Every structure is written in structure tokens, then in C-alpha cells.
Image 1: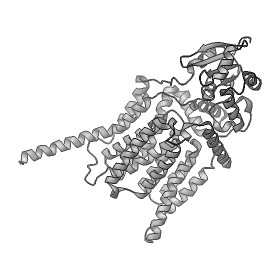
Image 2 (image 1 turned 60 degrees about the horizontal axis):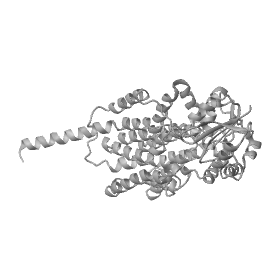
Image 3 (image 1 turned 120 degrees about the horizontal axis):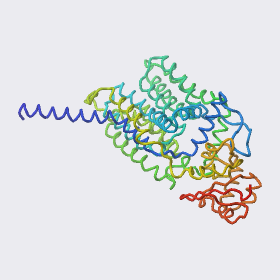
Image 4 (image 1 turned 90 degrees about the vertical axis):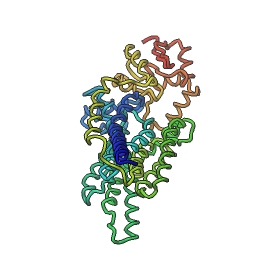
Length: 481
């Protein structure tokens, strides 16, 4: 091979690596584009935003139930109160478009935080970008505007602290406030306790094997802090009972995010998880020598949780970023080719500024917003009997003039009321009993989901249908008011 040919080959290789580096630099911005193109679909964000508005007006968490007609004034858990207030504030300032960007930055922030830490500790740009893409594929179906986005951000920041291996004391100074803030934003700091517990246990094992190694005192203290932080909210120790009730009712109702991946309702969600898991396994087997036990054990634990309850997939995806970035960074990787370091940040800022104009907020057709808009024109006041997934949008649109019979807060209603709801949907509880219990000012239900009740309303002389949407959502109001 001639000297000229070798020079050309080297130039081609450099150009190829530079191109990969440029592509890697814009991956975070591409993730943001994909997220902002998605519709708002989560029904619970609506009551959370309304509750956030009340919290802002009150100056802090409120103690009495404001929405559920049969529970008005009863003690109200403060689960996620800080997320509700902050997201309501963002919407009040910039509307749904600003909230979507803010939420997406929080959701992706968890991925990006640990990715930055990996880069600072030597992972190649291309490896980090590939890790982000694989993790993003797994978690994308869960993404919507919701307080869980804060959990992603806080978990990613915690993993970044672990990856950076800060000096003794620095991790405590940054970690303890983060854990307390996390639990007040979203009640999932127990995942942080798991991550810290694994770090502490492995550190203790290394010290036991070799006493010249330092004791993992910082991670042990942070593990205890994470456990204490679980109760560092206005709910205190009652968070245990609230969480248990929420899990019990979610499973009883059959909420898919609380169910295993292998149930039919989660097959579509399982596909991207399995794609990421299979690809990750292949990469891990090819580069076993680069695996860090702490990161791998946490990822395995979260994968088991995800397989048994899909709602943990976001945490598993974030935890996979450092695992994949490490195994895909080879010793000969060229780390800093492909444009200036500020390019990724500039691309994200540009997308955040342009997307609300280029792609304004769109809502999922599954949300009954057309039916609710029509009901508002009827000027009814009182309790709106709606299918429980629709309770959140009803609350956001009509409170305080409207109350609801049910909404998506599984912990709000005891098992007996959820059984009663099932009895209504299955035709065991007649319309006359529903009226006697709630004295509804209107009904807003889906004809197929609530077929027995919809059939009785259609035959009733006391109620008239004022709206039917293409999705089968119907609105009934009294004939005489």
C-alpha cells in the first residue's frame, strides 16, 4: 500500500468518525423532537394540574378533598404536591406548549444527566449517544406530560452522582437535598434507596475482601437518607398506607402499568423493552470485561421489577444508560471528534424554542375534550358522573362548579366503591341507584365501556342525549332543569 493510499484511508476514517460524532451530538435534540411530537394522553395530569392550581392559591398542600363528590373535605394525601404545583405554575405562565417543553426536558433530563456523567468519566460520544437511543426506545411508550417526569430527572441525577464518584462529603451535600426533593415531587425515592443500597452492599463486600479499600460511608449514609426521605413529605409515615392502597386498587382494577409485561394488555409495551434488552445482552456478552458490577446489578434489579410491573420501565431505561455507555466505549475510542461540545446544548435549545410553534400541543383522541366542551355549554352545576378515566379532564375543565363521582386516583376510593363502579359497568347496579347515590347533574360516559348505563340513559324519559362523539363518548343532561 502506498503512502498516499494510507493517507487517504486515514482521512476517510477521520471523516467517518467526525460524521458519527456530529450525529451523536444531535441525538439529545432528536429525542426532544420525538417527545414533543407525541400527543398528551395521560388522563391524570388534568386533575393534578387543577390540584396544583389550588395548592398555589393556598400557598401549600391542602388538607381537604376538593373533587370527589362523596368525599368532600376528607383528608387529602399530598402525594406529588410539589410536582402538581410547579407544573400548574408552568401552564399558567406559558400554557400547554410551555408545559410540554418543560415536562419533556425533565423526562429526558434524567437520561441526559447520567449521559453527561458518563462522558466526563471517559465514555465516547458515540457510545453515549447509542446508549441514549436504546434506553429511549424502551421508555418512550410511557412518555406523556405527568409528574413521573420528575422521577426520571431525579433518578438520573442520582446515578450521575454515583458515576462521578465525588469526593467524600460532596455526594452527601448534593445527594440528601436531591432525595428529599425527589420524594416531594414524585413518591418513588425508594428506587433511589435501591440504587444506593446496591452501591453500599458492593462497597462493603469489596472492603471485607480488601481492608485497604475505603468503607462506603457516603453511600451508606445516603441509603439511610433515602429511606428517611420516603417520609419527608406532608404525608409522613402515612405514605406507606397510601402507596399500599394505590397498588392494591390499581391491581384490582387491572391497570396495565401495574401488571407484568407478559399480559396481553402490555404486549405492545413489551416489544421495545425486549428490543433494548436483547441488544443490551448481546453488547454485554461481547464486552464483559468492561461491565461495572454496581451498574449491572441495579439494571438487572430494575429489569425484574419492569417485567413484573411495567411502571418501572422508565427507571430501568435510565439505569441502562451507564451500563451501555461503558460496554460500547472501547479503549481506542476517539472521544472528542465531531464538532464543539456546545453543539448538543445548542441543538436542544433550538428544538425547545421551535417545536411549540412548529408542532403545537395535540391531545389524544381518547381524551373526551369535545364532550367536555359541549357539556360546558350546557351550564350544568354539580356532580358529573363520568367514567373514572374521564374524571381528571372533567375536574380540570369544570371545578369548582363540577364535582366527580370517580377519577383516576385509585387511593382516593375504597375497594367497596371500586366494586360498585364495576357493578355499574357490568349492569348489576341500575341507573336509579346511581342517581340516588350521586344525584348527577350530567353523565359523561363511553357507550361501549359503560354499555348497561348508556342503554338505560338512552331509554330514560328523564335524561336527554346532548352529545355523541365519534369515539362513542356521550353526554346526557336532565330533560327538566
